[in-house]
Image 1 (cartoon, helix red, strand yellow):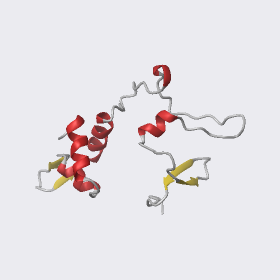
Image 2 (image 1 turned 90 degrees about the vertical axis):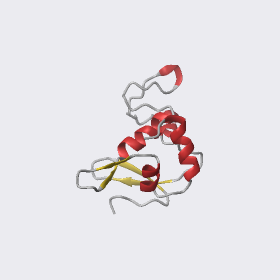
Image 3 (image 1 turned 135 degrees about the horizontal axis):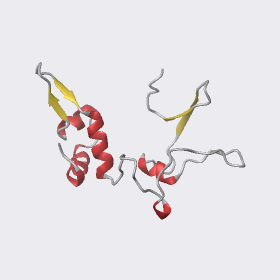
Image 4 (image 1 turned 180 degrees about the horizontal axis):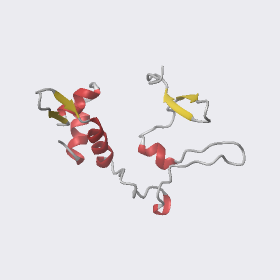
Length: 121
């Protein structure tokens, strides 16, 4: 299984491949007892985040002054809900990225990138 700079380099080389093929080519596949293959997507995505310097261990210090991420947001006085720069960096979001806002009946909000499939539809 590739990790670190080697993983990022392989992803750059492979370009716009299906995600299963990316994981397979980077070594994130195991052979089960019955001979079938199982793709280890969780390990694959965690390795990508680690290679980009993002830790999911809960002790990641991201942001000014080394503050730890709280994974909480608060509605501001003007009614806006702000998602901080540390979170958009973790998701590799770029200026101009667009999202469809989906509201749930339990006051939940889901942001779906424009052009991607909504998993609930």
